[in-house]
Length: 343
Image: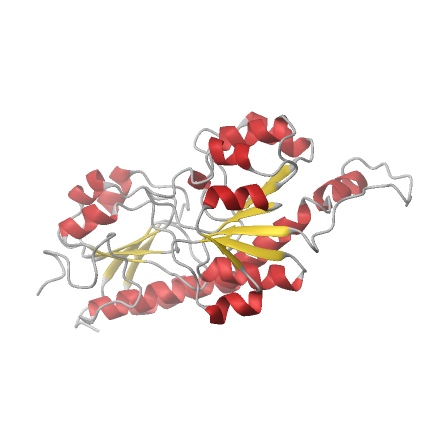
C-alpha cells in the first residue's frame, strides 16, 4: 500500500463486516443515511478523497465526472452493472472504473430459476390465498392448476456467466435450452446442455415458451425485447427479467399481457423512476405478473463477496497495479487512461 491510507467515500451502507474491514484499510467516509446522494452531495463528499465507492443507484454521468476533484482517481463500483456510470467520460478524464463481476452469478441464476417456477406454478397466488385472503376450501383435483416446466423451451438472451448458470439449472428441470448471444458458445458448453444456438433473436422468440434476459444494458441492448419482438413471441409464453429494466419495452410487455397474448412475466427489475407503473401493479394483483424488489443478488454472501472485490480493486489500484476488475469503454483493450492514474 502507499504510505498513507487512501481516503474513500462509500455512497451506500454495506454489510458490517465490509465496513469494518474498509475502516482498517482506508480512511473511510460512509453515507450513514443510506439514501441516494445527489450529484452535489457526492462532489462535496469527495473533497480530499482518492476513491469513490459507488453503487447502481448513483448517477455518475459525464457532467458529474467533469466536476470530480482531481484527487479522485478511481470509481470502485459496488455491483456488476455499470450502466449508471459514463465509462467513456471517465476514461477521457483519466479516472479508472472497476466493478464486481462473477460473485453475483450463482445467486442471480437461482433467482431467475425461482421466478421461472413462480409464475406457471402460481406460487405467489397460492400463498396469498392462504395468508392474505384467508379463504381456502381445501384440496381439490382442479384447484390452483398451473403448468409444468419440464419439456418447455427456454430462450436465453445472453449466454454469459449468468445465462450459462441459468441454463444449467433449467436443464436439470427438464427444459429445452435455446439461446441467442453475440457469439456462439463452444461445443464444450453447448453439448452438455443440449443447447440450440440462434443467430436470429426474432426467430428464437417465436419458437420458445419462456424468454429469460441475461445481457447487460448497452446502446445495442436497449429494448432488445422491443414491442415488435414481444408481438412475435409465441402466444401464451412469458418473460423473465433479472438483469436490467432497460432491456424490455415495459409498456409493450404490459399491453401484451393485458391483451392475453402473453401469459405473464416474472420481473426482478422494472421501470421505477416515477414509481411502479400502475398497470404493472394491477397485473401483479391479478397474478399475471410476479414482481420482486431487485433481489436477484440479495444474499449476505454475495454482498460480502462484492465488498471484498471492491477492496481488492482499491488496494491493487492504490499499489500501482492494474485492478483485476477494470471496466473499459467499448472498443478499448487494456492500456491506461489519459491523466489521473499516471505517475
